[in-house]
Image (cartoon, rainbow, N blue to C red; front, side, top):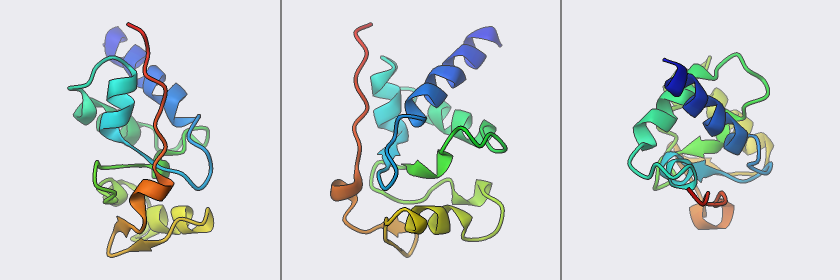
Length: 110
């Protein structure tokens, strides 16, 4: 459990660095942590972060820009609304101009 909690905190550290108006993917965060095959665990961390205002979980999407975690947010379109408030256009649960908005976290040297 301790290792999982530590992993989640490392995920949150990266998520906090995502600039407003940008998004990244679960896989990009996993790769930055030196755990490229742990995208699903990054998703679990994002799900566990709800209620923590210091973690912008709405800025983390799947590898093709789909709001795959939106059902974990209160209300039907909260994730989309939060992104659109930052200038990110979303149509049919997918980010428009995904590459333009994509932010790549620094890859750790582990």
